[in-house]
Length: 102
Image (cartoon, rainbow, N blue to C red; front, side, top):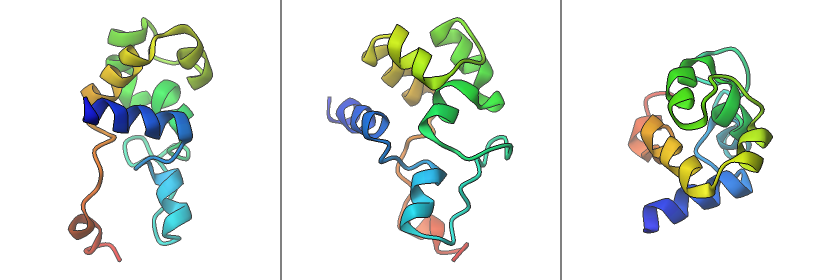
């Protein structure tokens, strides 16, 4: 449905609600992943590298760590979108949520 289309578009274009992209829109937002705080929260990090998402990743991709491009190359988009939904991490952040940090 519409929700799947939104997530697919985010992942394919890198125009996501992940911090790496949000920092481009608002320099006050840190680019670092809020889940693991080990590197920038990019689509590649979200799909394949974030250690905090490893157990969920293993459920969908049979690995807990992998290059994001390998996941895109090896798995159908609907499986990738299901993973994204399961993490709950690509839900748009509401404006009022950011007001406390600005």
